[in-house]
Image 1 (cartoon, rainbow, N blue to C red):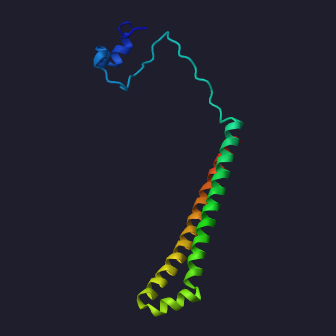
Image 2: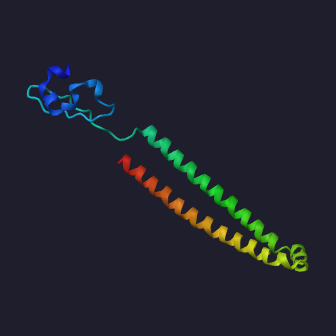
Image 3: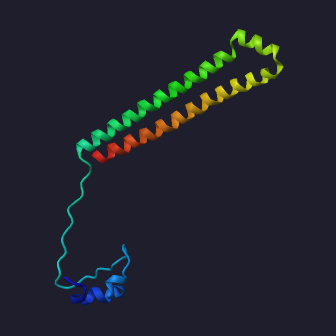
Length: 140
């Protein structure tokens, strides 16, 4: 059906008089026209079992990756803290006054990093748990 042969369409959309001037993505109003039947839309269903299973695997992978990252970060912090407490290093630092405050800064930074990682892991875990719950609700 051409636009010129449908006065209702032309009347609802005067901008369509010259199609060459209509920008891409322009909104068009489609009026109800007596005698014209519309096609019904197919009913929408939830995602397939395969999609759900794949998403569950992705979530499990993300959770494992999060645990590995947290464990790696904790190991780095533990290593920094154990080095700060190393007797030989402490002895050398005592002989160099400028390094003593730096050693304290490193210890404080390692402790803060450990706490931040634990907080981040808890927040991300909570988010992943919510995603899993939301995914489960799609199934039922």
